[in-house]
Image 1 (cartoon, rainbow, N blue to C red):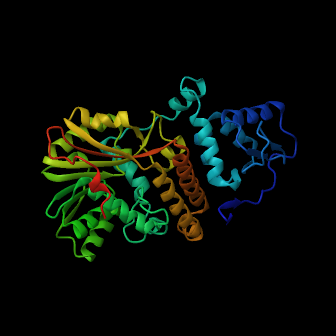
Image 2 (image 1 turned 90 degrees about the vertical axis):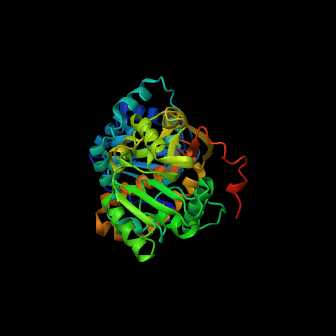
Image 3 (image 1 turned 180 degrees about the vertical axis):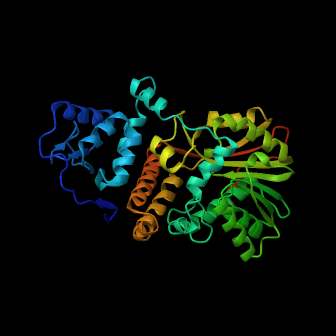
Length: 418
């Protein structure tokens, strides 16, 4: 598939299932699907050669190509799950503006009344799996242990930060914005030389190395991805920081000892709401009096499961929590929320940069895996970008401390100093 100026130009394949026209029922179902999505400027291009439009007669920003009748019926049964699978296999394609097409669809589905039968059915059929100790390890292995070389192709080069960047200036590169994110987090935590920092879910270890090198902290970082921990340990040793950083291959639930600062960037999505009180107790047990913590996580404005296809094929066990659900971490643990910031549009920009680098390396990625894998991850990155652009997903940073701590900042001035 060629990419030109952000548009996906896809050559329509030979028709499947003959050239007979679709039935009146199939036509009405497709028109109804467009109506559910708010009649966006999108057309369906069918295996018969026919084009289906909804009420919106503006020039379509994209055409969804359905190459087989069976793909149409799977789309109607469960559009989130089966359309992702059919796109990955090439039975469904997109011609035109890929992210804009997904954004229109997500905006429409997100506007479904929660009491509607369609919304209730999608919530029921797309229930997330539980995050037990054993289950969490398997879930993380399936996503993060795909191979460091794969992620190195499209994340920022030096630190491989696989979380939302912070665009303090709109023209920042992904490398600059990821460093700005680490400094933004450090300022929120008030990291000082000599501080002991505990990190839950450290990725490839970039935050720990940044805190040790630039803030003089000692960091103990927990992660259950063997690939990431191996990479992080090698990087720390190479940079001469291994005497100040301990990368622990273990679950956050097994944290012990005391820390001055607690931080978790991009792990809460994998914890499971049922485990939030446990996480709160772990934090309360390790965070010293006068300590401060920060949790950075994808979230939602109202409860809803992760997109079914992403949960099943890309991020097993993932769940983006609302702020109300996140409060279960703090309320039973006598921890007090100090500050909440939403970086939703920063994540949309981060994903745009990731997606552009991914597209520059699709040939290499296909040789490492296969074309189906490329299409899966194209859909994941583009769909995630569309979700943040439409407000279907949020990015919350929550700063907290012990409820009795009176030494907390009185203003936000410290967040924006150079």
